[in-house]
Image 1 (cartoon, rainbow, N blue to C red):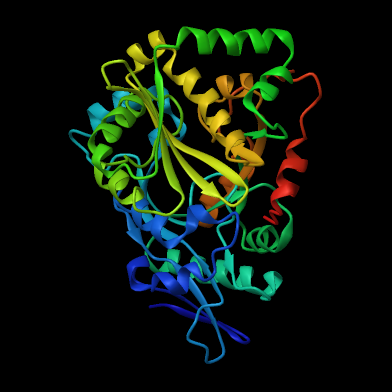
Image 2: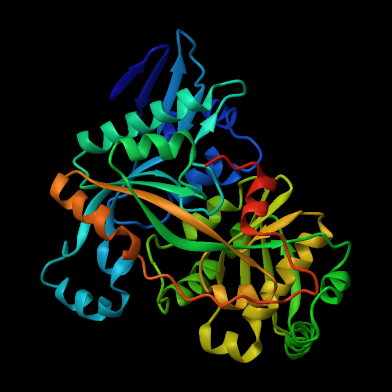
Length: 397
């Protein structure tokens, strides 16, 4: 258990999240941090990710036993081929039959890959300018001690603030990663949302709803009985994905997520009661996050299951009174077509080798192949800017 002392703070990386009492961890979770709650992180740990090992960071003050700050931390083997060279994956998979470890790099990550979620949990009244750098320092030391080649810290909406300042001082390089698609919801009803659209987008929405009229919407707060089918449908999307691929969500993940407060699924069911598509949702105060989905790709396209799912997520969010819905970072084009605004995201990366890190800092701006996003004018009145959407959440990272 590595410990760093920063004046009054004691920061340590503990052996696992399971070693931290849920009440202690969740005592730090505020609005906007549901994705890093103890229960959701423990569910995520049921995913299949090569070399996954939890090593979260805790900060304590003086002789107090209760933590005053925390940050999720994980060791895993980053698949460089998947993260950077998706077109080469068939060749890499073939070579891995002979060399299983080819293009995997040991990585220590602070944070969690859910968009628009601060990786840092702070007790009320704690000074962010002191606590966040201390958590970062402890995490960096743990990555070095654990033999990680890369240390990764995500997600951020800006390079400013205590986190960005400290990471820059430590030589981390900021990388632009896939933006998250956020829909502002100042609407009293789904019909009002449709009415706010310009005519071409309203007709597109009405056509999508009409073409998928055979599908029935079902909302479930408990879905452990569907875990195997949800994992199968999710895997159908994963196997054809051309964007970044990391963890594989298992039936155990969905089973555990079903028992986490504020998780839901929306199901699109066919007339024979089979599932055409689903969305895993996470309620987070006045905001809703669309985390995962699944459908059989050929049948789903024919049925319009995915587009119907997006509209039903928005309908669900409006009817439940959410202020924003975060649709996530993948398949951005259809999300922009339903009115989402792309919110830029940043991750910070450092290699333990100084020569390699110099190269990363030099080539970081082009390290991620981001999709070319063309502006959409979905609504008659312009939606809030990305900066305004972030400010409404009070994000300081």
